[in-house]
Image (cartoon, rainbow, N blue to C red):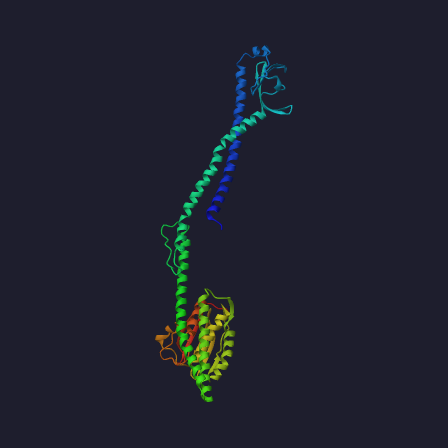
Length: 436
């Protein structure tokens, strides 16, 4: 499991280590340069101090030392004759130019300063290796605080990140201690600005989940209530068919049993359709659907049922209109509208389907010559399992609820109104944008 604290600690320490490394290297180079400058100043001051002494007496003494000092002092005359050397084992050649110079002599590098004093030349030198070692030691001692800073910053970062993540742990503990059915919002007070959007998103998710669970519980309760009646009727009809002795009575009972099974099957199909719509958050496969072609297929599909019920089902002159949506859901929408119209229209009646274009809108209309729906009930019929008080035709009460649900998912509107003839019902589904 990836730990935010470990990732932050590792990332901050790596970044801090790189910064400290660059800063330490720059400091190391700067200290060494300053130490070398100081050593050059020491050479120059040593030469100036010797200039104020009696150089002739020092030179004429002829004493050459094999001392332990780290500076080499040589005195020359103008002709290049060596008058004095402080250490014979470090004797260097004559410097022809005054000032500082770098010299490679017998495989060893030297830093040299020459000072012309009258007819004498004072030459002070120091081994470059000695200067390098001393400057490196001084520079490394200056880097000691950098080495102590890294573990100190690691502790600060560790505890700082822990303190920063404490509100997140508090939210996690709050959620972990909840009962499975507790969907109350998580408290967002006194939370850091970085965690507040997460808590708000979580609360939105809990609200949607609560709404979904409530809808599922209501759906299960309604489905159980609605299925109880047809299943009881089927059971009683099966028992009656089993007890029937007369073949005509048995045939009649079996016919009623078959009709009951068809009604129960239709109710189950509608329940499954509604459950699928509730479970899906968005439309399935969004495609370009030709409403006119869809209307032609639905009319052809329901034509045998209309003929069997002695109804006139037809497609009025229509326009070509294409909308974006799920082909299966749009087929269910139009199929439910046509099926409802055929179910409630008496024999000899008429059911018409029409597709029209109105500016950029697509309009689908299904009209019938049935009993219609009173204006006071036209909103309630979109509720699940609602059936009007005067309705006698068998049905599940889910057809128009499914139609409204599919229309909402496709950003379409559904309106019920009286048929143009004044008798019957007209259902209008309108899409705000469509292609020709």
